[in-house]
Length: 325
Image (cartoon, rainbow, N blue to C red; front, side, top):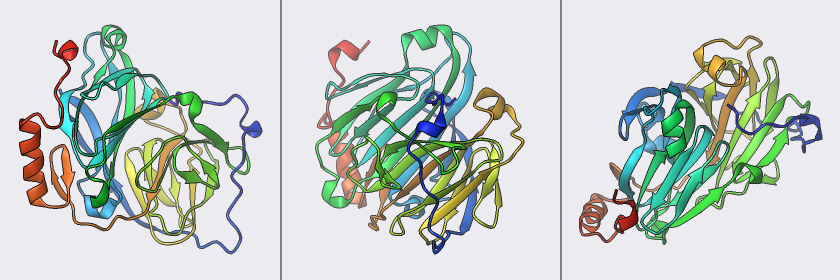
């Protein structure tokens, strides 16, 4: 990690520093991710839901960091066929290779630096598994899955699939060239990412060189969160210490600041970039009630019961015969 790099950051478009009159967002909370197992037994780091609820993370529902893990040959695991309804799943891969199939016939191979954006909407079945080549040879595996909520008016929108290759991500740098920013979706400092979203959000991945800082303008009507994939640093003008698997929540304002520690240490730093790698997340709050059961996120308990009935009756789709094996 990271899969997407640039040989010369100084030729990239620069994000100018916020105005001197900017209202800097203060750090309101730092939430350590929980270490759990999912799917067929793969390990993830999950900052929310948990200590941070789905309501507090609005418009996001779940964030899972898968790895970084070094798998032996024939050891890698995935998430076999399962349903979803009422939100979007976004899988961003940093190391390894994953194959995706869904009951609408969508899918393909997600390579390093690629993003799979699946709108479950009214309902869909899918699986996410290591590719045959990755499973056979083993090696470093590292990715992130983000769940983005849909408002009640879009819970039953038709399912769709977006394959966003690494070549389509928008690459930016900080004002001094010390940070590489990859915009996956939404707008950041006037630059739009390729992901098409139903819910207004910003989603980006930044790599901050040791000792470098990142000052970003941020939409005042959006929430603002930073998740540390690997490394150590400081958040906010108060320089709150942050490290691997921490989720940082910011208060109101129109600018955020981060700085990488000059000395990056730890296992993840050795496996990854040796820099401070973070996800930048924010969006417009939906502000609706949330009813959640496993892979279904709706607004009421009655809608959850309907989702279970629809899944059991095959109304969310069926596994294609070619994939039953």
